[in-house]
Length: 104
Image (cartoon, rainbow, N blue to C red; front, side, top):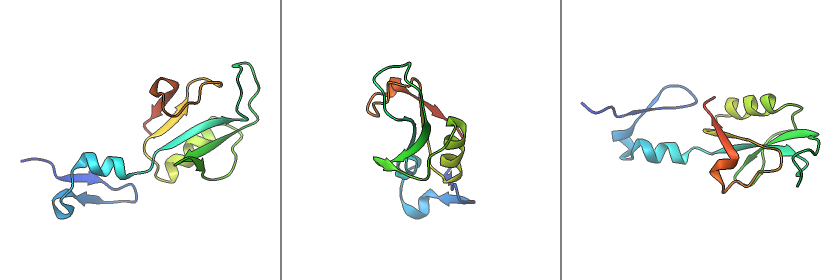
């Protein structure tokens, strides 16, 4: 028998047959978050003053002093997956190589 449940980040499970959608569709309905350095910099040696969580192109939540704090906030808010910038100066959201997905 095929598994027809998907995890609900707010507790419990979704019965996929009830909604007539696939697990793939459920996973892509959840918002994706990016943890970015601020301010933006062209150099990898420029200092970071804080980190922000970006969801659908705009900042979600306050500024964070550490990357870990920003990532934890995004996970607590239910964003999946949370992408964290690999390098300070490479933050193009359209380039998968610039990001590492954090499993929360």
